[in-house]
Image (cartoon, rainbow, N blue to C red; front, side):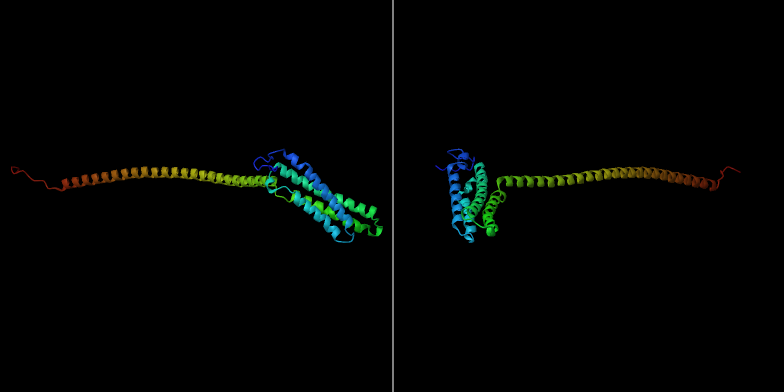
Length: 239
């Protein structure tokens, strides 16, 4: 049965995940790597490029072999193992730097003339350990980074949505105000047309009455004139 943690719970089926990251196998691998790096520093010639490349290559091989499997990504034990591996690589480089100085000045009796060269070669392993730690911890797209990016994306989307909602609300308020003004203008226009219709009806009534009175007066005048102009006829027995 495998000791790797399950994808659903992040816990190994047999034992606690802390036993995996703090067990004997990681410690043994680190101790063997430290001894191999120190031996390569002591055996390689001091002025040879092999003294620079061998410790760094051993460190890279150690990180590659002890790196957690892909199934551990996003699990608590995987994140803890990566952090532990980054610290162990950093301290390997620092330890090898101290050993390079001890080997050069104490064992091989380096002189003051090549002291700076010894320091330069020794600091290469510290540089390698620091670079490895930075790569493992700072340049990985971890679940925490994904969560932070998702939170930022959601907040940004909410801000955009809030701005759009505020703009839409302002447009609706402006439209409502315009409709209220238009409604008032329509009411005024209806009142004007009502007044005009009433005035037109009153004017039509008065005009019709005046015309009717004028026609009646003209007819009466014509009738009187006709009556006054007609000749009188005598009666037959009148002398």
